[in-house]
Image 1: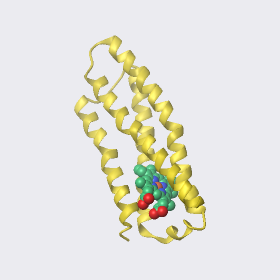
Image 2: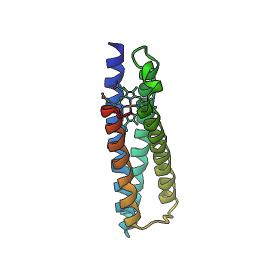
Image 3: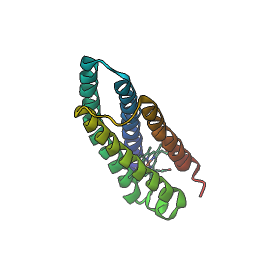
Length: 142
Ligand code: HEM
């Protein structure tokens, strides 16, 4: 029962985190395309607020994921290959999250080294990682 409660909250925070992880780089696309100073300033505020909002949500998603693993029902997953690959992908997502924070600080300081096309590709990365993670946790292929 505890396991299912933890899993429900894990999924809730993962979904909330991803709403932000999908939208933040979309804002970067608009930012990189904008020539208007007022628009860029407004985008900076939106990006900063979104980033600060989703950072604790990410921590909670990870916390509930780890909590699942230390319950008696979840301990068995430790030896399974899908979990190891999933944790590797999760580490990549955490790096991606902080990379967004770095790009955000660049925008705040008025310098952005990338064109909007770069951000469009950057935006696709978490989509693919999320798909891979969902396939791993649901199918548990190995
Ligand atoms: C420290 C990081 C994480 C750990 C230790 C972790 C661990 C787990 C565990 C043990 C389960 C339960 C599997 C089951 O009962 O079948 C689970 C479920 C799930 N996890 Fe994670 N997780 C983490 C992060 C993430 C992230 C970042 C995502 C999404 C990108 C994610 C997506 C999911 C989904 C969708 C489920 C539900 C699977 C189902 O009900 O069949 N997890 N996680």
